Length: 151
Image 1 (tube, rainbow, N blue to C red):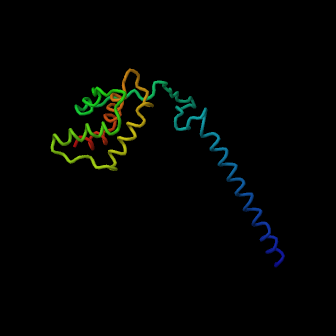
Image 2 (image 1 turned 90 degrees about the vertical axis):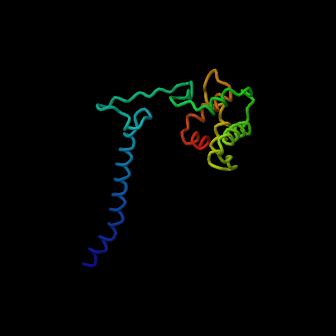
Image 3 (image 1 turned 135 degrees about the vertical axis):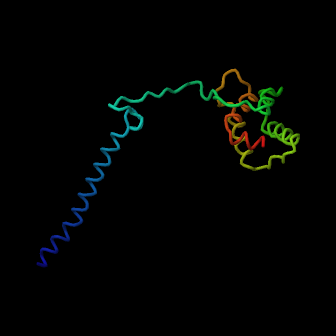
């Protein structure tokens, strides 16, 4: 009886190893079938035909949004390509002051987001727009930012 327990104890780690190897193999098989042509399986249509996603070289061409007058005024700025973050902040602070609103606080979330839009405006991919127009477009595309800048 003692010998049977020893043999059983020795097979236990081996059985555990075999079980884990089986689980790893099954997981690998499932994951290898989860992606077809580097598209997640969830993007496949019934019957296995992959959904075709198109990449556009044009980048972000904006979208449908309500053109806010303050952003439109910024887009019409004579500074055009030479507009800087401080110019954009000054524009919105002047508008806020005219409306009796508090000035934007340095380091606040809206200004951090705005700085990102200004910094990345050259990468936005909107042909035919100058920097001020690209920044205004980016601001209007973010309902959160637009509301924080204008309310």
